[in-house]
Length: 378
Ligand SMILES: [Zn+2]
Image 1 (cartoon, rainbow, N blue to C red):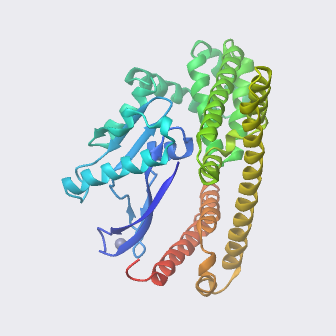
Image 2: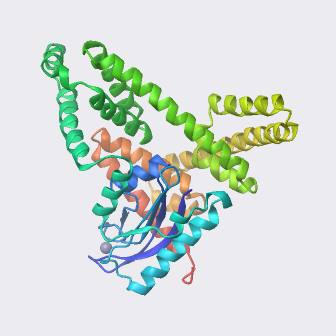
Image 3: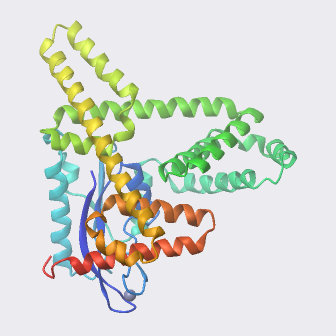
């Protein structure tokens, strides 16, 4: 689930108020949001006037249904007084609870553990995943080693390093390496993901423990995916209406692959063989419904992206971008900002700072114009 809302922040530098979108509920199973939160960039925002980076210190609720944890970050340095803060924490909890199907409303969700600092909360999240301080230290060492391979100037050095560090190229090493690949995939950096994947294969083949470790990791990963797919199917069954199912599809789109539908079919066969035709029929109807909603979702995202891309191109090619934005204000939506964000990111990675800054400027103008358009009491 992703919950977004607009809040007004005050710039500490110039005193200007900016309306920004923030997310204050983080689903630990939603890796994109979770990673953004752990890397402290979930609610990054900029002052519309002087572009100062501002990260609003709002209470954030983090929950993980699989690990059965609920944490809330309620920083004391937030500008809110204690009673307001308590009320916000309470309302976040309520929003989450109301949003979950009845059978998932477990007691731990009603009383999330509170943390005063980001660091202590991150530590608790990692601990709950079995990542202890000791393991983090080990990871830091493995990360250093990965860096050594990433920066090997030539094949000879690469092979020499493999010989030298062979005993350290173990399961933990390849586990961390694999998480780098996943992280690149999640941020949409396919080139980096492919480069890392090729490098991992190369390392695995040349080191003595590599191939076994990689095989184990891949097996574990598909097992984890299978478990998440089981969960998703359960949630789909519990969903009260299409609206809830649509959201499940949007949040878990990557899980709806061929193996997901194989799973549904297996469940249908299972029910049919057990003589439970009611369940079999219900699952068949659910399967058609999911296929339909998934196709609708794909159509919607594709159309929205194309529209955003089209508008983005128009603005970029225009000599008066402000005018184009003003004329198309209605089309400046999430998709537009997504396309813009992806292009800025790409430009930055390629070291094209000037185009990146120009595009950032476009974003700022768009936000400023959107705010102008909003009625004062919105
Ligand atoms: Zn400012």
